[in-house]
Length: 288
Image 1: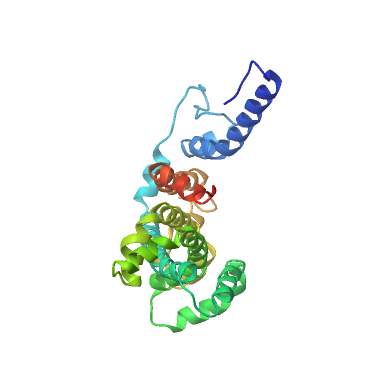
Image 2: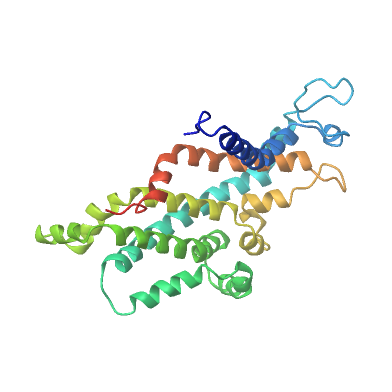
């Protein structure tokens, strides 16, 4: 709580710094929305305007044609559908496999557990470009199809992250819970599924949302794997390959409108699950 009476200078500096950070973070998104509501002539007005204005009268005049055009574009709608499928399935698979692995790494005893943890951590450190060529050769030789190939390739960066984070949450759960379940006759799977897994709901939401954002925004793998299958392009690739209505035209307004539309689902998910996300990020921060 900011106390102006006791420390007015520090409180003012704190609020000023907070305002600068908020503007710094939100201004790019505001500018994208502002530019997406402009025609091509409005975009090239000098000086640039903070709101859409008519080039002649300077009256406030938003242009919704960019949003209409992108939804009339089969390329964008198809990319949006593909992104929903790929990101959702990649997230579900990462959570399904990652929670089982995290339970074993966090609560069970077996030889090589520490080595396995470090191997999982090391997998998160490899740049995507270093494995792209080899992964592309493998995916193209397997009879999977482009979209299933992207889903399984996205597990390379979503699964290690999910497993590593969930392992720490399972470690923090009291061992007495498992012991009580075993006394009551529960099997290890029943203990995991009916008792421990519901307790990690905040962690599941946090990991799931972060994994979804990673898969939703992924560009390099999607661009490479869809080079021979344009119908499987995800929305980041579709936006990058937008073409203007005329030759040599750069569709800046439509590109920014598409970027705004793609950002909205992520913002909505964060707002819906914000309480769970905070719980997941702060769980285990206080011991005792």
